[in-house]
Length: 352
Image 1 (cartoon, one colour):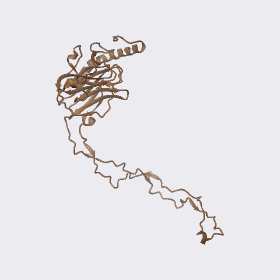
Image 2 (cartoon, rainbow, N blue to C red):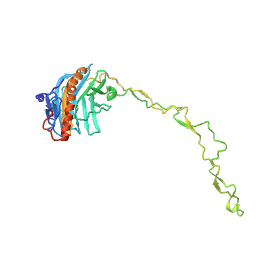
Image 3 (cartoon, helix red, strand yellow):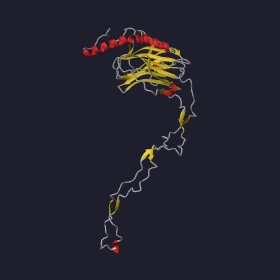
Image 4 (cartoon, rainbow, N blue to C red):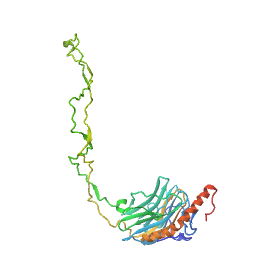
């Protein structure tokens, strides 16, 4: 499925009727473009709105083959908070009732809120439960058009590309947590009684010197019992205590590295008896609807060049023939537009 937008785009795309106040769309190449016709896409037009728009495509399965989801996004409104992602739904989805709670199979694309949340969302459905990618993928946060590509392969691996360059990849099992872990901690394992986890110890070969005096106070050797001391009345006389001039403090042996140190004992892992492998976690049997179900604070995002295919090579080729051809010109014109907006006034029409 590949979409090139024309003036008749509304014949294919369906606006959800689940809410009465969804934001409106328009066909536009925006304020700057590389090609005035080729760069036309569907653009959000109202601030502080939810949007829900979808289109059907010929049902597709990725059994024993790759699945590629690709599209372009241009946040030319200097987006501060809003989504730029797509959702892929089952073929039998009721398009007129699509909303935030509708069951989807795949969610993919940029989601931006300020400068602390600039993520590419990748959420995959497995057994009717959504799994968010564990790794971080940073979205492009500027006013240029960017190409986003998600590839899911039949060997249960995936790749994310931005502007036709791989920015993240891995295995579905490790990075999405679809399955229970292969290994779990053996809670019944006990630390061996002879495990030595002391990193430093007192030197057992060092002995206190025989002349080491630890007495801080001693009886005054020069004190004499008073001549009028009456032991019967006063008790046994004891000389007063004075500071020991030979006091050396408490003797402490030297601390050395423990030659028997075995490290910190770690609870060992064991095979998880509940783990069940699944070689088909990559598979979606009948995808048939692509949707834009999102929220935007500041509108103006343009979506274009939607592609869903099983052919990775074709996706890269189409990416280069659409986004790739226009990106240099688009970037040059964008710079001219920004310079004009900064230096003079509001522009009434696109720079050509």
